[in-house]
Length: 262
Image (cartoon, rainbow, N blue to C red; front, side, top):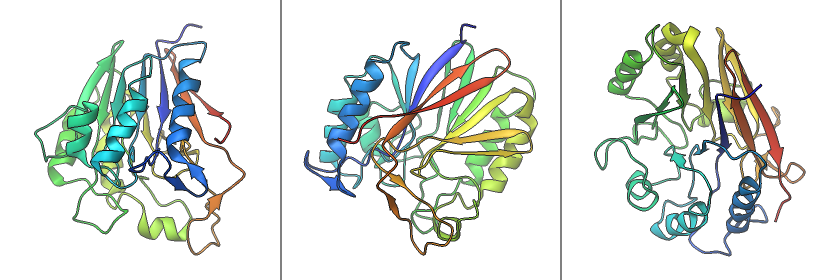
């Protein structure tokens, strides 16, 4: 069956200010280069690539410039979500991310093949980092978009929406008003394809009230997320990766792919 739409979901590349920046023994520049080469060699070219945040590790102009040089090689359009390590002004200026006035949240919509996409920027100084929060104005905008009638809808964001039985993560990393987001989306449940996010550095899925939330693996390095661990632990076994997402008429298909650690 021919998909209506195919996109590739990458996230959390954490590019540093130099080409030799490493995190958890991973050269993150080389990892993103390998991701781009792998995606370009994929037999089915995607309609677009989604990067769901933390393009940069330090929010510096140098890191965004380096990332831009790599991501410009992709053979497909790229849509960006602002992550907690990013600088939204630089995402707009250097990577061409669109949506809103400079300095305001990087919220925007786009449509591909009759499918509507809603991009949310929950990075804010109003909560301790690396948590996220949506403003009342953003929630109202989501409610207007998430009506029962309309084209098929997808939501793209960076932060983990709900607690996941992982004490450190649940206390420190989630979207603090994820329940409010979920409530705002419920009226559109019958046309809502899924909510895609990053931040976790681990492939994960949540299904709540018939709404599917999907996290892609990091294209740089993964965390083990053991419930008994006091802090996030680097997982040296799981390789970097990405998700390939196919939209069929009655369902979505999400496939995780890995590539060799550089």
